[in-house]
Length: 197
Image (cartoon, rainbow, N blue to C red; front, top):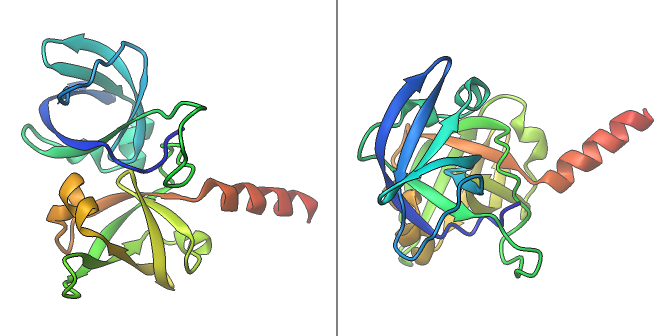
């Protein structure tokens, strides 16, 4: 489990195909001491550290993850958002994030409200809109955000300056793909209600 509070951005060192999946190598951020097997949220997708090398950590990305995310389009030098798994003793400052991407979307518009932040409009794949609730939580590329205004498959978020600085959303541009995860509490409620009917 994660909180959606991205710890940092890190550059991709290498991308190599492996069968129907790929091996993704990302630079180890300063101060991190990753362990083989630990879970890391990489731009919204929960991946396990498959191996370590000097200054780098390798992830084996399955076909399922490639089908559900935009990670397959990564190249050397691209940046990803990183967050280590939370401990049970941690504060939950964001919201519960599983790292299991529900769908993809794209950035539809970026506006400057004049307060140092950005107002970003995202457009989700069909079906995702049922989980969008005004003032509800959504995860975009691993970042915990609050839905300002859902408009069908589109929704707005207000991104504060510190989030722009710490995450890849600081370089948000229309047309860029994003990984989306709905608030898991809403998904659990939906599943329980469906079982009753």
